[in-house]
Image 1 (cartoon, helix red, strand yellow):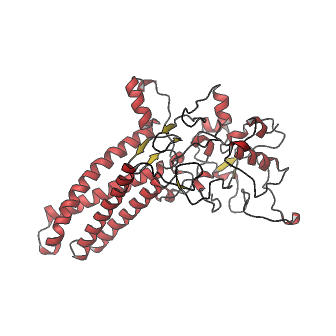
Image 2: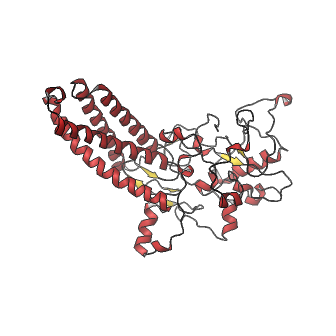
Image 3: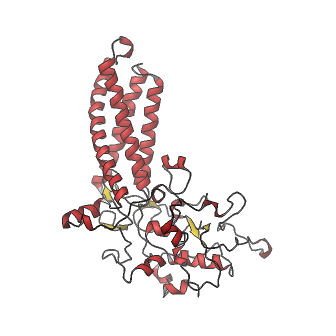
Length: 399
């Protein structure tokens, strides 16, 4: 399942279609999901066989502009509940600005100087380790394949670090509203006292990023960013690759120290000092990443993030927790498994459910899309200004 090449692909995911325009306020805002009964009673990973992705196009090309009525692209067929279409509309800002505000085109936390320094230190230390191993390779202290493998691991680790730092961790937009499933499950919903917006379950307001973050685990100064629902995959990959780098170097140096018995495997005297410093760094990185991996994996297995866990322990309410484990597809998406190991944005099978909110603009697109009665112009104005918001969310739902 692949979407268009629009920016912010992770925020465009498969959405469930509704039966037809005669549906009376069906759970339209619960798009991106399949039948509730199937969701509760089945462990099916994803209904990928609901359509033939090789021959059937389930998305509307918003970039296609034409004034000729005869050449207008047709709408995909109306599908039954439990099937998907791809909402590839890109409503993300295109401005070349850095920041954490909703209008910034590139997510980058520049308000925390300490976090910026710690994030830069990660790059310096990883590049130092790569330089040390490269020096060992050049001086024939280790075989070339071993040095090349380590540098590949360092490259992947730094790529995941950059992706974690520059990816929106799941900030809640000001236009966010509860999904239909959430409105049916409870009568009242939380509001953020700082953002004055809807606060999805499991979200927290980060005073450093100054945004509410969906399913927030913690704010990591080494990433200079929050770890939330949208960049948890990249954070896990960074920890995994860094842990592998530390283990790899410790095993490499340990083998040379304990089992090297001839001059062929002896390190060059000028490189020995670099190796000693790197050994201490690798040991510290191994202990730290091991602790963080266990912490994050505990949160995945229990569904309780670091902030929530600390709050529950402080109030002695851990035994009253009702959270469920986080599914792997809610972290790595529904793309092929080989993409799970790459620092690319996941495509969620149910964007609204994973993020914890829905958007009136997306509901409006879905209504037009499913009814097939009105054209969907490419220049739809999805302005973030509250002046363009409808007076009532129910105006966006089919009647």
